[in-house]
Image 1 (tube, rainbow, N blue to C red):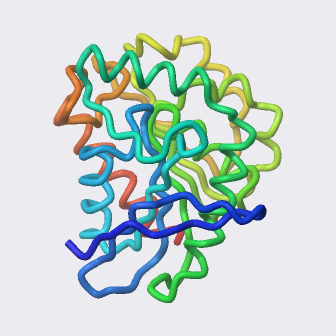
Image 2 (cartoon, helix red, strand yellow):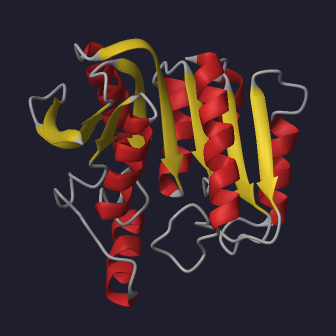
Length: 231
C-alpha cells in the first residue's frame, strides 16, 4: 500500500498526525476515516487501506493527540481499559474542531479529487455525524455512533447525504436511542438508516469478539454503493 503519516496543522500552529492511504491510481475522492476509541491502530490502518483499494484517498486522523499522540491499542482488557479512559477524557468540542481541520487538509491534498466524505466507527461514528453538521463534508457514514441521539439539535444542519449503520443488539446504544435518530431524520431524503439483526456494537471490527462477517460485508457494500453515488 502507498501509505504514510502526514502532519495536520491547526490554527494555533500545533500539528497532529494522520494516516494517509492512497488508492492504486494515486488519486481519488477523499474519505476522512475516524477511529474507534482504540486509536489509529492496526485495524483502523487496515480499514483505511481497504477503502484506499476501493479508490479513495483516505486520511485517518489521530483523535487523541491532545492527550497522547499515536495511541495504538489492542482490544484486550488492558487496551480497552485505556481506550475508554481516553474517550472519557476527550475534549469533544476540540475533537470536532480537529476533524474540521482534517477535512480541510484532505481537500487540499494534490491527490484528492472530487468530493470528500467522512466515515467513522463507534466514537468515530459520532464524530462523522458532527462532520456532516460542521465540517462541510459532501457525505457522511456513521457506524454505530454512540451518543448521536444526544446531538440531534444539529440534525437540521445536516444537508449532505448521510448513512447510519446500527446493530439491533447493541450493548452500548439502546433501541430508544436508535428510534430517536430515526424520528429526527424521518422523511429526510438525504438520510439512510440501516439496522443489522442479531449483531452487537463493533460488528465491523475483525479484532473484536462482536465481529460479524456477514453484517460487516453487507455494511461495507452499502457504504461503497452510497459513497459511489454521492461523492
